[in-house]
Image (cartoon, rainbow, N blue to C red):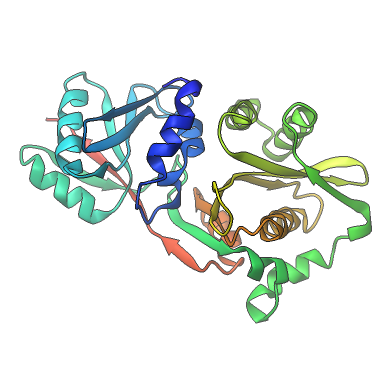
Amino acid sequence: MRDAGLGALQRLLDGNPSADPYQASAAYFALTGRDGLWLAGDDEAALLVCRHPHLADELVVFPPFGRGSIELLARTIEDLSAGGAGLTLGRATAPLADALGSALPGRSWQRRRESLLDWGYPVHVLDTAKVAAHRGRGFQPLRTDLHKIDRGSVEAVDLDPVRHGAAVREIVRRWRHAPEMLAPYERLLELFGRVRLAGRVILHRGAPAGFAIWDEPAGQRGRANAFAHIGLHEIVGMPRLVVLDMAETLCRRGIAEVCVGGSETAGLDLFKRQLRPVRSVQLDSWQLVPG
């Protein structure tokens, strides 16, 4: 799928009644499918397939939606498996895997603990007003870290992909120390203006120290989806300040919730749980067993 088709994809996904917030985000699929993304469907159902961003010869099939979606999923699995590529059913629930097993009785599926993609741990949704206020015992870890930052030394501005591209790249390099980790963030910068992306950059004493990127709903009072919220760890409290600024910005814009996604590690999941999510969704990966 070319980027020119992302607007039409978003309009299609706006009608997707999934409990998983990212299932309604064209930006999410464009990011995860940066090495190849395809839409399959008929008059009643649709689904998306992408190349696995970290594994060669592996395809990720996402949950379908619409009437007759299980039948579409079964047909797509049969067609793709005939090509010899490895297949993962991603961001899926156990009932969906069970339904697929019934539709494909000759196939075997195994739940796999996800370690490479962003749903190894539950997907969390935050209340932007509650995070912005961060009152009560549950937000004590957030307040403790924020008190370690001199807010007078911090400036936060709306992210412009051209003006702030170099700052985003510098932050990612200092955060991960691995050039190959830059690709997802380069892709996010490319997607500005093609999908409903927005963001913020945090400067600490004039130097880039953090940024957040999210997509916004078409109307107010909806839910945003965050794709990056990175703060340099050497500045104590900066990762939490990035999330706080994102929540404050969204709250001012009338957006009630933000999904901060799942996690690849237990440490990142704990960080998100300390932001007191109002909803969490457990998702799994299912591997098609050859044969």
